[in-house]
Image 1 (cartoon, rainbow over the protein chains, first blue to last red):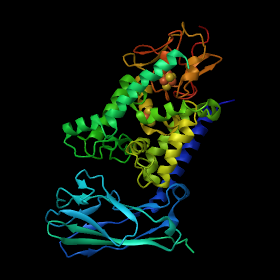
Image 2: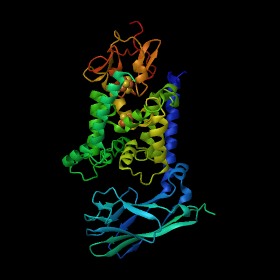
Image 3: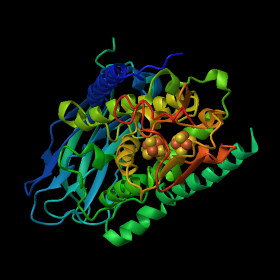
Length: 177
Length: 295
Ligand code: SF4
Ligand code: SF4
């Protein structure tokens, strides 16, 4: 069998085909961002803030996700800063949830985050950000319903008990009948 | 399996195991030590070493994403320096993410495997991927985390795949299945889609021009063109043609498997002249550097 890409011109052709294929993977990867939902929270000295509701639509799942892991979804702060402390004082962050029917857990790459207590064990200093995600295992029998699940993520200062922000989350499937 | 092949695989496995305990959690000796030095506070596993991020950010100006005194940036510098002087030492000796599919592919009968390196020259494929990987952050989405085979191995070890995106699922399929266990040699992902390997080989191809650096060498007097090394090379970078034996430096891991299996001792790793005659190069480094036919 003759190997493709062994002569100068076919090597150049193979290079550009792979280049184009990789770029298409990059566009595909961009589409996959919609398989999760992202929210941002700026913590200010004002009273508890209601953050814009975040909606995760299962209809945005691409084929590999649909086939392999349709019920595992993530609602996340994203990697660009996360929740940001814009107050003048350190905050002791706890992440609570209410209302979700699905099994879920809070995950963070921050080494000081205690997953069991759902607390950041060191203070979030002014200007700093905290990145986390709420990973849900949706009930399989509800995946094809219009309203799959909903709940609220609460950011609490666990030293004072003050509610700092609330993020309403709804998980829907706009392709459901 | 022949004795020297088995012995070489066994010895190489020891190195990859060392790489595994050095870089991957829960042991992850290297990031732990480096974090002591740098004062960085992150989970000790492959993520804190991340070699893909600095490469993916080569053109975005954020190569030292976590600062110059960070485990990731220092590791990136070590990677380049070692590639210049020693060849892709990380790939050839320490990368467990490259070794896992290679070793698993040996369990699968050959008739079920595709010889990708025979279908298409891996050199232009690798650099086509690498070029697009570098500009992807400007055009669409960076392919750093979502195509990371290191993260996937860490997930396997943690037995927790967490929430995966379609891109991660596709990468798992490429790394472990299509270009992994069902690929002759098991290293299709290394050959085609790993920017860490591509960068090292690019640096190695420059370093290998100097006498004082380490490289794979061929003793043309000893080589009988028996083809054992060609069959055994996990990257498929050796081939026999009318000119004799040829070698693609842009894809060689310097894993030294060929050196161990050669019955004539014709291949070795060391400094000095490589012995690969640089005639027949039709484009930089590829397709091949054939041995002098008139030996
Ligand atoms: S090419 Fe990439 S995956 Fe393969 S051995 Fe090298 S670093 Fe590891
Ligand atoms: S040519 Fe030899 S050293 Fe290079 S990848 Fe193949 S077996 Fe390893």
